[in-house]
Length: 120
Image (cartoon, rainbow, N blue to C red; front, side, top):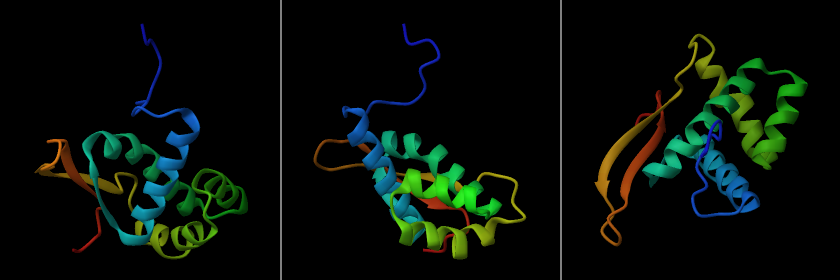
C-alpha cells in the first residue's frame, strides 16, 4: 500500500525525476506556457506554484531554496525579478492546466501548463 506516498514516479528514478521537474519548471518560468503530458503537468504544478511563492517572499533564503530546486540561476533571477512581482496580490493558484487532446504518436493526453496571466 502507498499510504502517505505523494507524487508520481513517471517511470524514472529519483535523480532523473528531480532533473525533469527542474527543467520543466524552468521552461514554464521562461516561456509562461509549456506543452507537456497531463501526468507531468500534474506532477510539476505544485512545485511551480511553490517556486512562485518563494519568489513572492523575495528574501535571500527563498532565493537559495529556489536555486537548490531549479538548478538554474538565470531562471531564478527571472522568477524573482519578473514573474513573482506579477502575482503579489494573488493568494495562490498561479498556474492552470488546459487540455488539448491526445498526442498522435501514443495517444497520451497532452495539456498546456500555463501561468494564469499568460497571453498566447
